[in-house]
Image (cartoon, rainbow, N blue to C red; front, side):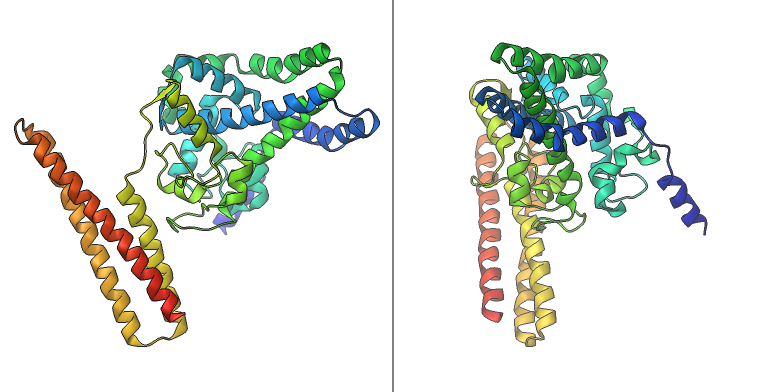
Length: 382
């Protein structure tokens, strides 16, 4: 009974009228005024051009900036790039870097915990998508203790201090000025201002909602995050969410070359230009281990449901035992690597490092071969 009362108290939190008004009025304008003006007056090529430019830059500002640079510190950026990302991310009207990152770090720490995760999918699609912002829920309170590094950062501290000035300048003054230059103030403001803002909002919000409901879990089933190619397309790569939740310190979300990860390509392009360095990647072995572990789970479940002979199950158990042994060898290598670093060997360091690297490659190859054997096993059975 007490738990029900506590839940009702949380759901009946006071309304955040400021956020409700902004999100509600901009959405209303986007579905009424924007199409009406298009039918009656039409939009110029300049209107559509800046609509597209601002939409992509806002997505990159949030994905490459707010998310991968500041929330997870997956790479180091040149100050010039930091300023660009701070401005374009601020234009998205999703709060300052400091507040956005504080909630996002808590989301990763307490994912799927309905009492602590700011936008837990366990409280429903609507709550995770937008409802969590419309009321002052206890789970949405900003914990500044998790963003002390950002409070000391001159770029993020400046953006936090001047956030609303930045928002009004980029979302009102800039579109109006561009409209004046191109001869259509209202069209530019409606399309490149309001429509762009609303679309960017909901594309980002889909990561909190759909990306925890729709898609596959190739790397972990310990949380609700999922990978989905369509979501990746409209969110500039953020839709590979299952991978991200397990390997959040990787600057990539889509790790395959063909994955639709625009933010990964943007960061890599900036690296070629000298604006990015120290890009972090999850060790290949850990990625292979996670994926193969999920494949073993799926294979075991299929074998149980199919009621196949004990011989196939025994073969699967043998493969899994080999998998566990490979993991143990890798862990032993990790310990040897640490010890090697502590001993500071001078004459043998290069030789031993090369031997360790060779052994790592052998273990990675072993996992790849197991992946193929497991695929053949399940294909033969089913």
